[in-house]
Length: 251
Image (cartoon, one colour):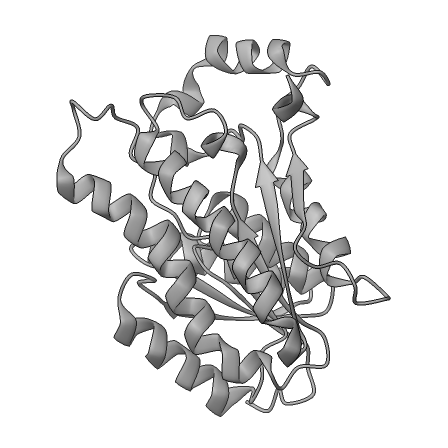
């Protein structure tokens, strides 16, 4: 496959939910998208099939973002196939919806390894590829949970707080390579990451009622927010935290 002169993107955790929708949105914008999955191969296949059905191009790859060899092997493959990378979307996460009392140390580490260490590993090994791009972008999928860490999302809130700090640091240090780093901060989004709570209509009605816009964010809201950060004609948007939550973080 010769994709040397094709815009290329990698979206981690793109077998479902927000990641899937971002991958589809980038493909619509003309990117060849590397779709990744860790355990949900069928979900990843569905993402690729939808991209192809709509006239886009994509490749399905297995990726464990917490495993250094898995990340390194994927970047080696992208280098062989595409020789560069224009967009890295660090989206993969593993939510542990439990209090400290109910969760294990392994569950705590899983949340941190996936969200924080995964973003660090993917960024580190993608750097040589991103340096070859004329418009290199890293998009972090974070959240405002670190500002309001509920007790049952302690591990996730801690991971996103660390990811926020990582984003700030990279936004200072990577522009020398022509790489911009921004974060998208979704509010509550009704996906399977809620581990069954996505089916609780009363819960989601409450979220919507509390929101200034009287609704919750959709996966499309989040995916569409990624595009203007990447397509900034002046290539000057860097170090931004774009909240996609109807202003709810201000309440």
